Length: 248
Length: 248
Figure 1: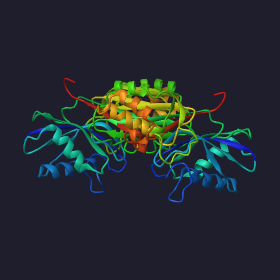
Figure 2: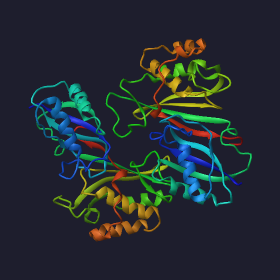
Figure 3: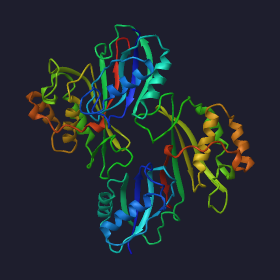
Figure 4: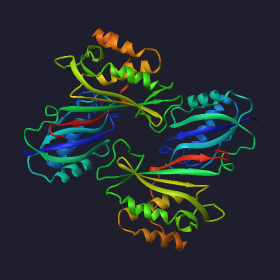
């Protein structure tokens, strides 16, 4: 069974998330059906990150086993052809060794969260950003973000339904920057807890609005208590932006 | 009648264009109806640029006369409230003198055209870019664009239905740049002929794909013949990005 790596972009808006669910269309299902249509057999697609309902991907990585050697460009183009009109696009396909696993081989994940902080609602980026009606203090947010970087028990920033064995994770970077009219929060780690990025961003926004001081975030982290978290940021501002593998 | 200037952002996708038409919803109509709902009287909104069907605006400018003095922020917020769910947003509202006319007072207009030149279709920017499946040679496009800058008879790049008195216009800038995975074409002039930007961009793309040489664009311009134009670029990549007034 030749194995292929797929690099993917998608608009999470119309999906219940990456993973197959009974309650609606998933990105995984859209891909599996598109690939099955040209490969002529059922397939199982494994993704590096199980993005939630409404969360987008600039570059998700997945793998799939096919029953014969297809040219990689054919895998990319034929899958894209059969994906239409779903807003999922295969950016690249490449043959990989049998021991490559999109999820378990990954050694790093990066997310970007886009905030639009202005009075007027977005017309062009509706469903692509979190609209916050007041100007955010990015210096205060950056100071707060600094308290979260490193190895910590992130229980405060973890969804109740999180299935991770341990709440202890190492957050490699949490950077706040102004990009044009938007504020972007870039997060990098080997892996994240369920809802961790949205929980951290929602809390940083409290700081950006002046409701919390930066050091309150440090206290919330130390509490190791879900109740100490700020509001969870909505899904439409979040993008899985990169997955890293050994040697990359 | 106090006059207000409105700065606007909109997604052109669901509209027949800026101008009121019998065949579908227009941005002008959406605005006039939203303003009438809070002002309590019918209004006429005048725009600086009559964008075509499907063309977007990052910053269109319009003016409207109201029957009494409203705080400018109320004009902005109340219009935005009544615009929902139309993808039109009032970025700013400000009182202006009676002799300010969004269209006739304007002394400059700027457009940006977004091209995505890659094999895979866009998932996140569908309806926001023109997808060209091969890599564009931006150096060749920039050389070709140079032939169009300046004062010329732009008959070649003018739609048959153009109502401008003269085909002679001064193109102040036509800049080609790579921005991440995209190619952007920025155009600036006092005013443009109907379809001029999309006609120029479509022709530049022929150069970027290697089908035309840069000097062929010079020849097409000199022909003063609509038949000498390359294909007209589709509307979804075009954005009215700025309107300039005296003193700005």
